[in-house]
Each structure stands twice: as structure tokens, then as C-alpha cells.
Image (cartoon, rainbow, N blue to C red; front, side, top):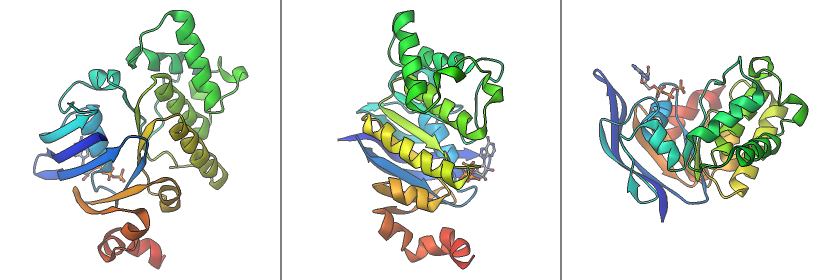
Length: 244
Ligand SMILES: Nc1ncnc2c1ncn2[C@@H]1O[C@H](COP(=O)(O)OP(=O)(O)OP(=O)(O)O)[C@@H](O)[C@H]1O
């Protein structure tokens, strides 16, 4: 059964149709990739799915069989759907540990303080942040470490599904390789992943299905190899990169 299902979802800003009648479904346990040119509606799609900061204008969004379209971000998170953001978001004046601990307050599982601390430490260690860094201010971390912290904060929520918005942006090649490995390990925990990325090798190496958005609509969807060989995709999205 599909864990996440969208039918005819739309979101406009004035006359701009940022997301325009998008339908797709993500099976439990898979990594599902989303690509598309700048401004094609990828982040807006994540926003309307997670309710952060807004829901859709129309359409159906079902998570684990239940309609979530238009619920508050907090209620959607409590159902087990977590996200990260394109830009590294953390509370820079709080420590690494405090940032990740806050993820739990949004998550589905309510737990005693000792257990919450244990889950937070486990999530941080899992993403590769060592114990010695737990007390550092988040603002002191490198871009890669901040991305890992965002992931740990989301994982601490114990989500069933994680939406990752351009996790490889601004990273070096070795850091991108480490991110691929980390996302595989997250999927290995049984967390279903919806992944936006511009770096196509990144998407191709991780995704079982790939969807390409163009001007708010689905241009192509299916097995990654067949999608990137689709002439419409090459024209709309890959043409300039291939030429380059
Ligand atoms: N809050 C907003 N108010 C007005 N217009 C917006 C808003 N958010 C997004 N848009 C517009 O909606 C369109 C889709 O933007 P979106 O950020 O979803 O695209 P994207 O595919 O994620 O782009 P990128 O790859 O550059 O991140 C763009 O034209 C953008 O300017």
C-alpha cells in the first residue's frame, strides 16, 4: 500500500501556479526522488505535504491511508512525517544536543526525559556527530555538520517518512558521498524517503522511482533511468547540463 498518496494537488501564489495538479504515490520503504529545474515547484510541493508553512489550495494528500491535506505542520509531524529544509535550519544559539532534542517535542512519540535524551543521543551519533560536539553551539558547525544536525533532529522524531529538500546542496564531493551513504542508512532503519535534489547522480544512486516536475506539473515519472532518458526531461531539465 502507498504510504503517501497525492491526487491533483495544487498551490498558487496569485496567478502563479507553483504546484499544478500533481499526483503520485510513494510506497512504504522506498526512496522516491524528485527533480526539476529551478522554480519548478519542488519545495512548494514539500511545503504543502508537510503543512510547513502552508497546505494545498486543492487536491488530496493521504498519509498511511488518512487525509492530511490542510492539517497544521505540527499535527502532520506527529503522524510520523518529518522534513528537512533546503537551507540549513537550526537554532544557532542552542547546543547541538538541544537542537536535536527539540525534534522530539514535535514527534509522534511522547517519552520520559531520560528516554528522550537517550533517543536524541542515538540520533546524533547515528548521523556521525560525536559526543564531544553535543555541547557545541549549532552556529559553530560546518555546513555539512549542520545538515547532519537537521537530519538528526528529524530522525529523533522517529518518523515513518522523511522529506529531504536538497540534502547535497553546497557540499563537497566527499561530503556528497557521505550523504548518500547516510541516506541509505536512514532508509535501512525502515524510514521511507522522499528526496528533492539537483545533483542527478545523487538522485540516481538512491532512488527507486523518480519524478520530474516542470512549471508545477509532473513531466515524467517512473524508473530513474527511463525518466532521465525521456526526451521531454532532457529538453526541460537536463539539456543545458548535458550540453555543459
Ligand atoms: N511563498 C511564496 N510566495 C510567492 N511565490 C512563491 C512562494 N514560494 C515559491 N514561490 C514561487 O513558486 C515557484 C516555485 O518555487 P519553488 O521554490 O517551489 O521551486 P523549486 O523547484 O523548489 O526551485 P529551486 O530548485 O530553485 O529551489 C517559483 O516561481 C517561486 O518564485
